[in-house]
Length: 142
Ligand SMILES: Cc1cc2nc3c(=O)[nH]c(=O)nc-3n(C[C@H](O)[C@H](O)[C@H](O)COP(=O)(O)OP(=O)(O)OC[C@H]3O[C@@H](n4cnc5c(N)ncnc54)[C@H](O)[C@@H]3O)c2cc1C
Picture 1 (cartoon, rainbow, N blue to C red):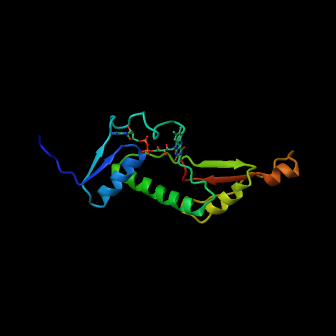
Picture 2 (tube, helix red, strand yellow; picture 1 turned 60 degrees about the horizontal axis):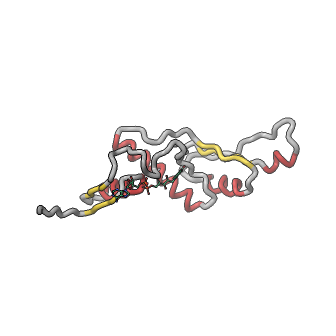
Picture 3 (cartoon, rainbow, N blue to C red; picture 1 turned 90 degrees about the vertical axis):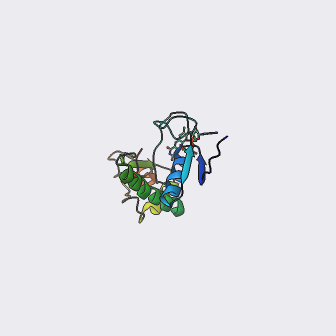
């Protein structure tokens, strides 16, 4: 039986395994990515029309990681010459008090300018208008 000596093996070619393989190969490793299905298959967690790239988190560390991820999506698209992430932008809104923290965390990060919208509707009571927060993130997408 012939023996193959491999430098680095990544098992699973979903988003995580593919990202790990890409990062390792970019750093000069000789990577073998093992996937049980064909490329672009629909059997893993990484596939689905509900997936989106939404940097709206209250924790600034998470937002910083998502800003880094956005940059890496750009780099991957440039490398492959193919658009992978449609930057549609995402709006998060409602009365959850954490939205204020999310807006604060988004501000100043490289995920693009976030803004607080929603002018007071003409017939809205003071309470509803004052507790509604809306955060936009233009670099989000799906
Ligand atoms: C319904 C749903 C909605 C989600 N929505 C979002 C969202 O909006 N935004 C977001 O950021 N995240 C979302 N997530 C989470 C995100 O999709 C997952 O965290 C991510 O896709 C996980 O990637 P993965 O590579 O770990 O797993 P997978 O994509 O499942 O990849 C694992 C791969 O390993 C392969 N594999 C397994 N065993 C073997 C083996 N023995 N040999 C060879 N290959 C093997 C599988 O075939 C598969 O391709 C959602 C998840 C789900 C389920």
